[in-house]
Image (cartoon, rainbow, N blue to C red; front, side, top):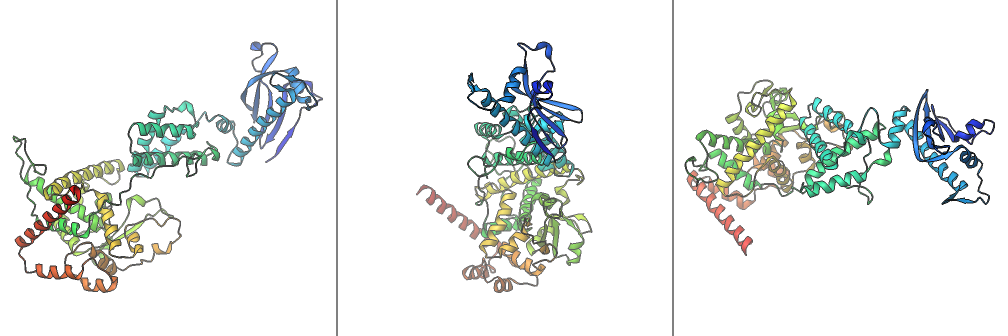
Length: 539
């Protein structure tokens, strides 16, 4: 890169009368001069003052918003600040100094553009005005949406599209605005979202999508690095983290209770009479509808027992080679959410030991295990995996079905929470953490990304055997397990269990109880729990 600056050459009066400063950056010749392209509209022999950029025969004129005559240009070039008379608000020399600073700033902009890629007039214009002939901030955003959708990330693409529509509608930003995005525009957007009562969690999702677009624009040279407006310092825009969901979990005892409800199918769901207006909230339309409620409960339990997996992971789960090589004792899959977010782009691997309660659910809802067959084909409902948008819509619909059905179940047993997949995931982590299971196992089991820690080796050497995984995951329910590793062995290894001696004695006594006795005991416990809750609530 070459960089040269000089004053006007006194030997050429035509240049003296037209150009004040000039410089060269790479292939671009830059000059501050008079714009004489339209002499017929010139009045009082004054021309617009501009900075001209010249590359390979093409020119771009950036107007400075002021005019100057040829005689004034000569005086500016000769001005040295020796007791000049003040003309208006500044002397000729003071004006020259001001214009020199403007020119130097533009030379610095071109230098930055040249260092970040191919130097073109369009990129120079973009850096100076935020406008481009071939692209805009919105077109880059649309390009990212297309990339996400084509790569199978239909959910992410939808989030980016929702953020795009919200941004354009609330800020009025258009293609004509080019890349003129700054903290003022983003602040206006945040204020408008707040006025529309959009929750901070949703605002955070949309702002993070916008941040990706800003970073892409900076990386491609459409925006300068100094234009980045997000951060945690006072002069930057902080993206809200959203409300915490740490309390969205069920205890081991609660999970055990709903598991026993699924197993015994003992909940009374009255069949609704469409002619009556006083049907209870948990009334079902038919016997088939009741079976679907239990099916949704089973899928919720499977999400919990499958290391807190998302429903899309459960829907895409297959009986693969690993399942058969592990003697049908474990599943292995790649978290859909992390497929392209790890260092090597392979996604985070999750290994799920099949405990006895899981086997019961599999025996009830899953077809006979065959190579590459879906474990729960009804979750996909014949939707092809190659159609990412169709998969996204199907999973969203099934998530809604599960939420609606579990709401009836919660009403039927007198619980107030609205169960979702988030409860399953948080319950898995919280309950194992409370049982003093190593944090490394919980993170590994949930398929959390390794980030920048560089622990690539752990991707190839499993830190836990299937037996150890099964031992830990049996702590998720207080039920017996007839596999090789008994609960007693897991107690000795973990050195801490969720089953206290008093509870263990109670379970031993319950072995002699009939099913009706157990149901009655559970109802009594539930009533006591509700009475205690009412006392705490109303004093």
